[in-house]
Length: 101
Image (tube, rainbow, N blue to C red; front, side):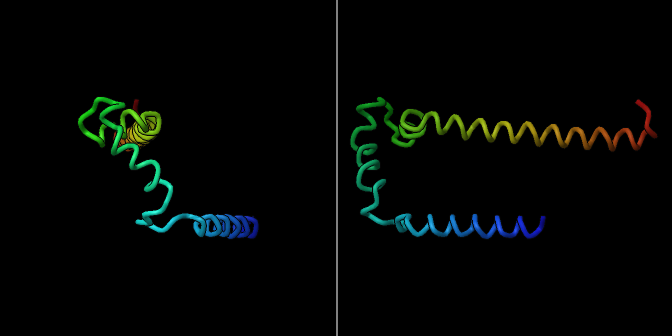
C-alpha cells in the first residue's frame, strides 16, 4: 500500500511540474490576463457595473460566482471547526464530571 501511495505521489508531482512549465512567468506583460482581461476590467468596469471601486466591481460583478464559492468554503470550514471544538469540549466536560450526563 505504501508503494502504491509513493508511486501516485510521484506521478502527481510529475503532472504538476509538467503543467507548471506552461504557465506564464510572474509579472509577464504579454500573458493572457495582462493583455486581455485586466485592460477590459480597467477600462469598462465603471461602465458595466456602475461601481466606482474597481476591486468591488471585479469581485462582486465579474467574479461573483467565484467569490460566492470561496465564501461558502470558508463558512463551511468555520462551522466544521466550531463543531469539532464543541465536541472535544463536551467530551472533556463529561470526563471531568465522571461520565454523568
